[in-house]
Amino acid sequence: MKAPDLSTRTAALDRAVEAGQGRLDRELADSARGVVERARERGGLSAEHTVAALAGATGSGKSSVLNAVAGADVAEPGVQRPTTAHALAAVWGEGADELLDWLDVPRRHEMEPVEGQAPATGVLRRTRPAGISTGLVLLDLPDHDSVVVEHRVRAERLVERADLLVWVVDPQKYADAALHERYLRPLAGRSEVVVIALNQVDRLSSAETDALLADLRRLVAADGLGGARVLPVSARTGQGIDALRGLLAEAARRREASTARLTADVRAVAGRVLDESGQAPPARAADRAQGALVDALEDAAGATTVVEAVRRSARRDARLATGWPVTRWIGRTRHDPLRRLGLRRDDLRVPVDRPDLARTSLPQTRPSVRAATATAVRSYIDHVTDGAPDAWVLAARDRGSTAIDRLPDALDQAVAGTRLEEERRPLWWRVVGVLQWLLLAAAVVGLGWLGLAAVLSYFQLPPLLVPDLTVDLTDRGGGTFELPWPTALALGGIVAGLLLALLSRGAGALGARRRAGRVRRRLRAAVSEVAEAEVRRPVAAEMEALATCREAAAVAAA
Image (cartoon, rainbow, N blue to C red):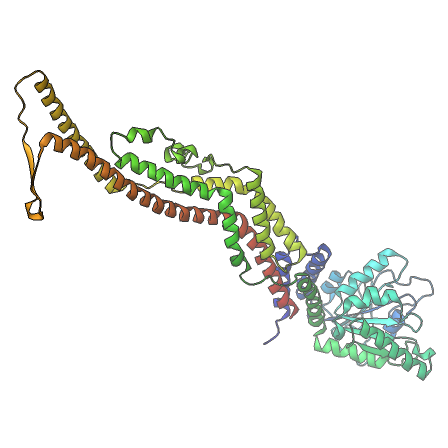
């Protein structure tokens, strides 16, 4: 697979930092933003010039090395320390002004003469020595160990912005802990744009030079710069200067140091971001943990209580609609379970545009309910964030704490907004109700007929005509059975009404269980939506941001 280019890496690092906003270590995030900004700014400046910086401690001989490489007295070495307050630039070729402005280097020396043009103020024109081609900007930085803080800050800023770093060390300070820990070690992974020049080797014997170079290479490798080039040089005698000059000339000719430096910077800080992003949580962890969360929230919402109330209320409604009319009034004296919970449709009168005003009478604020909800949310978050970095886990838990405060009202509104009653009463209720009234009417007619006949007989008035209902059972081995119509109507109406009421009670109980089952499914769906909105989506947003941060950082660090 082809490695991503600098632009792709920079954009990926920017996405990673954006996704890790508030979660990544602040110093790391600032460092990553600084790299992104430098890469974009440097990309908009001269690509024809390579910026090489000579950095080093007081007395290491940076200025002398610059003069030796330039073949002219560009810098003026001095006895007083610190020697260099502002960086000095030796420039081969034109068109580097904007780049030098960005570097904030006011002292500039153009090494190639321009015919017919007088030198500009502050600019010294020199003839370039053999071997140096156009396109090189060689900086002499302030001492990195200067006693003046402002000088050190300028040096560190230019160390960050230079394309190629040449660290000039001397035999006395090459192993200085401050040099390695503060400057070289942070450059780990950037070996191709780092050169170590051991200056003043003219003061050493050949054996001493070899020993120091071996030790210096060991120290540099321990700093993470095993591939960095280590050169022995002497600014006084010119030993090794041609090799250093050739290295700089080759870098200027290839024009790759800038991209290599920025790519190394992006990869290094992206690697740190990737390390801080930890391991990705297990796949589908949220799906596996959601069932337990919804179960707990159902309990917290009182779903079992509501379902039982729906079942009992449906049985009550069925009895009132299909029971024997004479005894229905008894059922009306019993409390409606749904109305007691404030869940009857006519008890939830709220503005259409303000469904959040709906409230039930369920005991949502009980300490045990809140504790169960909090436990369920925390358990869910622990499963989903397993393996995630602490900062992301804490952020997810913070969102969970907010959800715990909001859940009682959200669950109550979910229950209040769930359809618990059927839109229309079952047709068989109406059919049975009509039959019950017809049977009651028949019983009343029969009883009235028998009562009127008894009154007439009591007062010895002419009797009413009372026909008989004849039932022939001879074909079944029985005889003929006769029953007066008034008695048949009275007994038949009462007995049939009671039997029909009993059958309807069984059917009503079955229908009530089915309705309770449907309501249970609706309530679970409503509770699942609350869990999704209040818990799962906020936590998922954190985990998605973590995944984005990891993926983008991986691209930048590839």
